Image 1 (cartoon, helix red, strand yellow):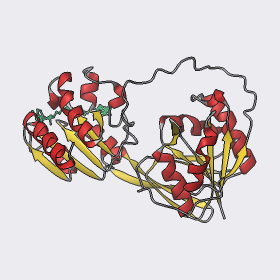
Image 2 (image 1 turned 90 degrees about the vertical axis):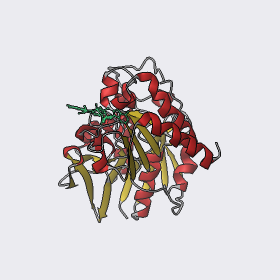
Image 3 (image 1 turned 90 degrees about the horizontal axis):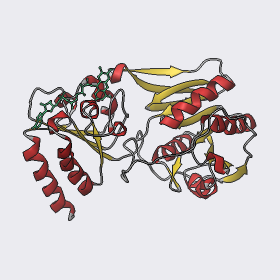
Image 4 (image 1 turned 45 degrees about the vertical axis):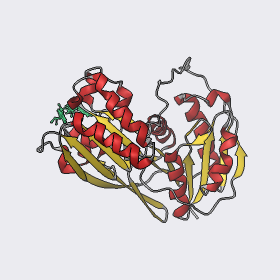
Length: 321
Ligand SMILES: Cc1cc2nc3c(=O)[nH]c(=O)nc-3n(C[C@H](O)[C@H](O)[C@H](O)COP(=O)(O)OP(=O)(O)OC[C@H]3O[C@@H](n4cnc5c(N)ncnc54)[C@H](O)[C@@H]3O)c2cc1C
């Protein structure tokens, strides 16, 4: 049985949804699934890893790993890869994944594919499907002559389900001494308590059609009712209306929620690159020819200042909020 190592990202003591998906993908494809988690509280994740199919849970429970540091994470990951020799390594295509795993690939001679949206396990080979040219076409990548095969996968690609639980055997490792060139001195958290855009099940994005920053309140009102996270187009980020961590698109975040509501967003190709993997897309725009309608599952041609309050009110009634 091939061995797949899954790098588990976690926040506030919970495994991130994207990592749960990876554990389940490995388990559903008959892999011997090994989970890897770092940080002083990593041990508390062990049973959740096992529930998602992990046979073994490899931990480096060191407080130096509580915040991401590329050198320390690379050192810790290298130890585990050396000891477990996995055929496949899966991680999220998150900012941590995209920083850490190219370094690991360079260090260990592994092959790497990022931004995957689907995987096919074929014996000792892994094929990864990924979008190219801002989602205009798809490529299927496979590996040749590499020590192991690393795939970074986008979040929200499979529905979570119940899989056969793994044994979840704990294996603890020590952090090797590392001569650090950089030290993280402080992490300043963003003010939003909402789920991160890349993990959110419902995203409501606003564009220049909102006219000014204060009108984002209309989106936040609807988001509060639906339990959604608010995103934005680059035009409004560049205008300084909202912060860059809310930007969806080619130079922002890639999201794939169950429901994406685009409000006053034209649907430029660079915006579509970040959200066209959404399951259901609703567009609200007063221009019937706006490109966003070509991608939309449902379109509302109308003035957002009339449509949004009505929509929020109606959802409030239906959901009893
Ligand atoms: C290299 C590069 C990278 C880029 N990366 C990104 C990226 O990551 N993300 C991104 O979003 N963009 C990105 N862009 C910018 C992109 O090309 C567009 O300029 C941007 O997405 C437009 O934002 P917008 O849709 O909010 O604004 P606009 O294009 O101005 O669209 C506003 C829309 O609001 C509608 N509207 C106006 N008033 C109302 C109303 N009252 N009710 C309803 N609808 C209304 C209009 O009909 C229009 O369709 C990038 C561009 C480049 C060159």
